[in-house]
Image (cartoon, rainbow, N blue to C red; front, side):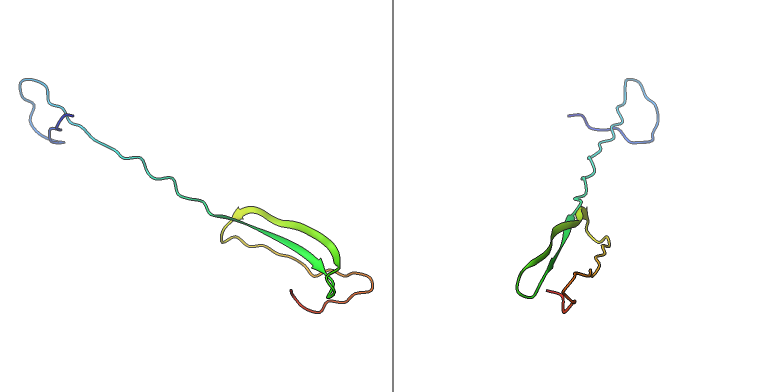
Length: 79
């Protein structure tokens, strides 16, 4: 409720009040994302259940999955 005196000046009789007012920095929003992988046959049969590759990872970070080998099947395409 007070008005600040200047940051620099001359001391005079009485009390001067120099007031610096600060505002809290906003907390940056951390964006997260997840990646999972599932291995399926063309007919929809699940060859390996869905599993997490990245859980709540930082947006912009890298992930990597790998093509796997399953007996009686060969890789055709990405779904």
